[in-house]
View 1 (spheres, rainbow, N blue to C red):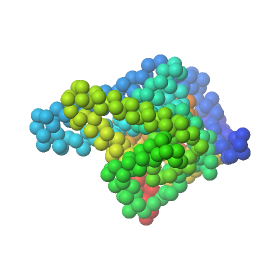
View 2 (tube, helix red, strand yellow):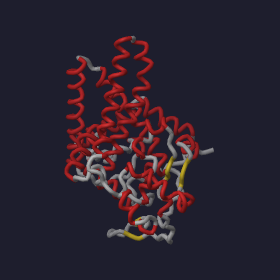
View 3 (spheres, helix red, strand yellow):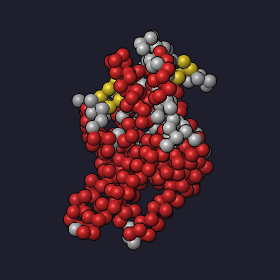
View 4 (spheres, rainbow, N blue to C red):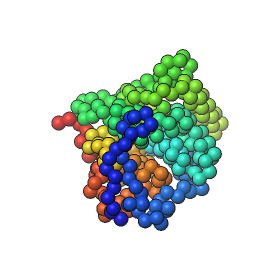
Length: 345
C-alpha cells in the first residue's frame, strides 16, 4: 500500500519537537501488520539462550585449544574475543527489545530476563534505559534527543575515528565508562549513561537518572560477574573463561557498540518532519551479523519507523517496504561504506 504518509513533526507535552510518525495501516495490510507485530511467547527467550550458548561454546573451544596446544589457543583468542563481543552486543540488543516490551509476550518475564540476562551482564538498568531510549524515539536527532551526542560530532577526521577505535580496543573506553558508573553508584557523582550502547567519551546528553538506578545496575553487574567468576572456577578450576568474557567486554564490545551507533544515525539526512530520515539501515553480511549487527539491529530505519516490531520481524518489514519505500530510506550497502561516509575528506 502506498497511501500518503504524514510528513509534519509535532510537539510533546513539554513543548519539545517530536519527530513525525508513520501510520502503519497506510503501509501494510491488517494481516501483515498483525504478523510483524506479534510478540512471541518463546522466540525472545530462545535468542537470549542463543547468545549465551554462543558465548559458552566459544569460550569452551578456546580453552580446549589453549589446553591442547597453546599456540592454537593464542591464535584463536582474538577470534574468540570478536565472537564474544558480538554476543555481548547481542545481549544489549535483546535488552533493547525488552525495553520496548517485545522480547517476551509475558511482561513480567520480559522484564526479568531483559534485566538479569541481558542488561545486567553489560552494566545497564532496564528501567533507566527504557525511559532514556523512548525519549530518543520521540525526539530522534533533535535538540531534545538524549542520543544526539553520539552522532552530532560526525563527520570526523580519519585520525579522530582511529583514536576512538584504539581507545575501545585497548580498554580505555571500558575503564572510563565503568569508573564513571562506580562513582555515580557509590560516590554520588553525575550519573553514567543509562544506555549500555553509549561509549563514555561520546558524552551523550543524559536524562536526570537517579543515582539509585545506577547503583542498582552496578550491583547487578557485580553480582552477575561474581556468578560468572564462580562458574569459571567451578567448571574449569581456572580464571581463563572469565578472563575471556571480561576481556571481550573491555575491548571488542565497546568497539562494536561504537560502530553500531555510528551506523544508526551519524551523517543521516535527518528531517524531524520526514519519518523516513530518522535512521539508517545497513546491509550486513555474515561477519557483520556476528559482530556489529547481531539480531537484526542493522534494520534501524525500519525500527524507527515501526518501533513496535520485534527484532526478529525486522527483515520481514524490510522486505514489505521494498517496493514502495526503500527509495525514501537511508540504506547503506555495508558497515565499511558507513564508516567511509562519516570521515571527512
